[in-house]
Amino acid sequence: MSLTIFALIVYLAWSAFHAAQMAFSLRRGRPEAALLLAVEKAAPEVDGEEKNTMAKGFLWISLLWLAASTAVAALAYGAAARGSAWGLAVFIAAGGWLLYQAASAPFVLRRMYPGRIGWKDWLGAAIDTAVWLLLFGALAPRWVAP
Image (cartoon, rainbow, N blue to C red):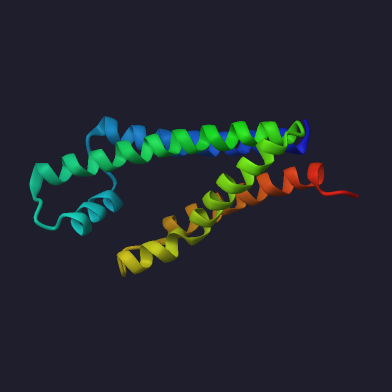
């Protein structure tokens, strides 16, 4: 198996793990604590069940964003791995933004929710960043002249 295929499999598996976490949270009807904090930040006047409903809405938006960004990145990565210039351009743009989001997430969250960011947030960001670096690293030899 080539490194580009391995990197794509790792990325898709990690994205599937995130999607499963979100789906599980929706299924059990209890949104993650971070989403409740987001509701508190966005609409502090909201209480009780309305807060839960808003947090579920944020969760659906996050799940749709994950699906869309994963699809775009995976398709562009596949095209770039096959030599497509448009695939490379789209992957660099989308992947660069998603890499930035992955690497900066705990810092941004720490500013938004002081004292609420734990080791799981840092670990998730480190894994996200490593997966994106793997994707870029696996693709680089196909586009960098020897």
